[in-house]
Length: 475
Image 1 (cartoon, one colour):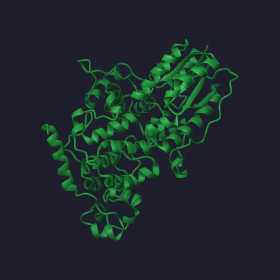
Image 2: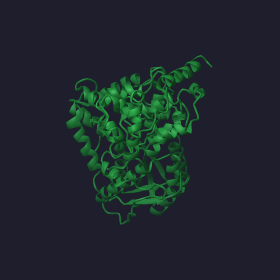
Image 3: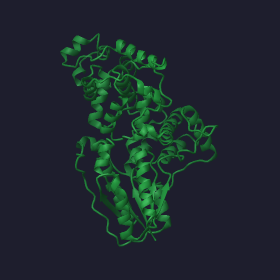
Image 4: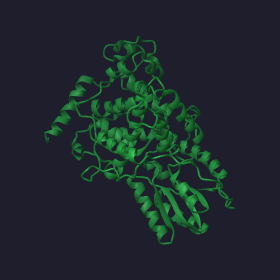
């Protein structure tokens, strides 16, 4: 009987759990749903939707070589998914639909609705583990609850990996032609205009490019990862997050590559490899949190008491932050780079997030939303987890009294102002000392037609600390 794989954020043929399971059970057809209104509600970035489409085109060619036709259907949102799946399964006499599980609340509700509709018509709905190393809910504390602290979660994961290694699979073997025509792929979706050619060139599509980038990172930069990962002007990070978010790479493929470079050692050995494995486990942690605590994917704080924080309504300051006009060179450079490239260095994500949520005391959800609307690697679990960590509202969050000073961070991680000069070129002529110092260099900044500082750093820090202290005191 015919099998169907419903593709979502798993746009690859190699190590695709649902695709392999479907093809092992019979002749297989693939389906992708275009849901523009749903994407808009989820604040998916136009550059991310374009990245999906470009990768889908590459995957379509790969599936064609495997003999798997790719069908494209479009509905406004996920409420139309059950009808589409039922119709396709009826037309093709599909026996089972295979999906790789997703963990957001809306995704889970969508899949439950589809599964129910298919069950009524005798079609099985098979869920598979693919986007995580371990099924959420299977890594538990000694008392049986979900982990709330990353360090403990990491230790439990490493113990599990030692006893039951997780490895990547290969692509399935080609199947005989089915005589079913695939559909033409759109190159754009209304409401999601393609980004610039420069941005597209920065993020080439397809498994071949993703795997080549993984190999280059492991061969050339992994050992230095621990030292270079915090310097935004250097290519010290893997920059694989867009491929992981779209499912063009799997976490298992990344883990395998790191282990091969580290002689099979998860913790220890090469410091860079060990630290990068830790970052893969941070990704894993936030997926488990998303599933165990559904409120975090519903716009709520992980720590409910922090909902009482007196977030400021300051639209002018929010806009200045969004557009890179805060008067803090490193913050502005980071925000401008985001708008131009669809990506932001992780150290800069922390600095900009803490500046918004602490120095400006603007609700972290405003920043979470802005990032999702512009990131090519926008991922609900990762983005939410990072924002709540920085805002001190989340699991394993930074203590409220730890508040990055963006000037100190700038001096430490961009000492020669290389990154600032690239993205705030009006300051490029300033000295290595002056380029970091908004209050001291105010006249120089003004002469360069650079925006004035929108907040006093010392006073805003005191304001944030006072707000959290009153929260802790029950005020």
